[in-house]
Amino acid sequence: MLRIGVLVSGGGTNLQAIIDKIGSGEIADTEIAFVISNNKNAYALTRAKKAGIPAACISPKDYETRAQFEEALLHAVDSYQADLIVLAGYLVIIPQLMIRKYRNRIINIHPSLIPSFCGTGCYGLKVHEKALARGVKVSGATVHFVDEGTDTGPIILQKAVEVLEGDTPEVLQRRVMEQAEWVILPKAIDLIAKGNVRVEDGIAHVTER
Image (tube, rainbow, N blue to C red):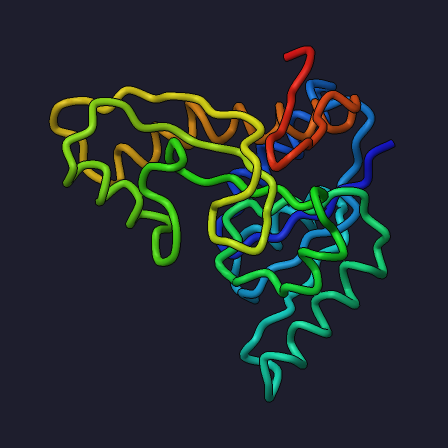
């Protein structure tokens, strides 16, 4: 059984997709051990509680120093003994110590086809604003392992989504979530649960899609 922890900052739609697909069996042999948010008002915490999943808010605002926050976050993650950490719209930089300790055991969903529209400062609606400003005809989402860079870790899955005439950032964001994010994030977790993802020389190799 793969034990996963989900870190999230907002509404938790990706979290809900994971909960639903564990329930339907589309994600095999997996349980959500905990949900942590940096935002006490995040609806994701409500989703977790409704599903009977342990949930907590650990916010940098509640600690005097960044180091204290990072220590508290790492202590909480360690206490649940999760096999995989899933960043599902988590808008806080992951501590370097956590990245080293959980090497190739932290995954993130990013709302573009990396390496396009990614990196420092490129998150949420800003990604879709940049995509539309550039005039791309195809966008999408990427699931990747987390390393010390920003959106630079080994890519596990990507899915393309068509950009339509008249799209606003909000409309494109919704389409990318529905057609890509909610599909490939659960799929990546299922592949990892089945042992079908390995990383060699900085590249993720996926078998049995």
